Length: 206
Image (cartoon, rainbow, N blue to C red):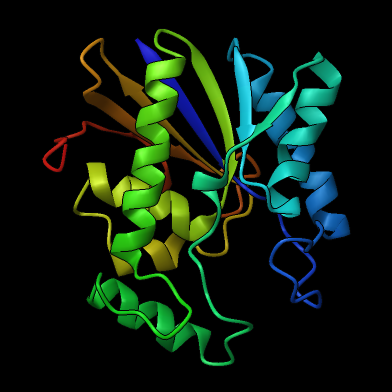
């Protein structure tokens, strides 16, 4: 069995509009310790991350403490947007209603999903039988969850949107089929109805 543990970044400094360089907030720096505590008991074999600073910094505490090198993986970056969107909420809702909706310079959710799944499939080949932690982002991880559990839509995204960090674990069998998906909030600060409990993957898109 291969286990992939996606870690959404902790709270970041929203005043910094630079997607690549936005750092964690003081709260995020503190909350990333909960990620370290969680991963410490998981037998992590490798740590990957989106190249965005907030994602790297969220898993860096664990990596530094346990002497694991972080491998940057561009495929797990956040869904591409053109600049800072003032109408972000409306844009997000429209994208979840239409997976192909995009604006100039932006990715559609379908494009982001395909990119993330391609990156994930490469990880599954490279780290078969291992447990891998991947630092990433809310929309990117949500697109992966939707791929394996089509019931995850805009309503579910709204519920996890304030959850930072957010952890999603996926188990894959030897044939690369997702057999189980689990969500949790390591800081216990989010609605529990969607976060708690396993989801058996239908793998209908695979």
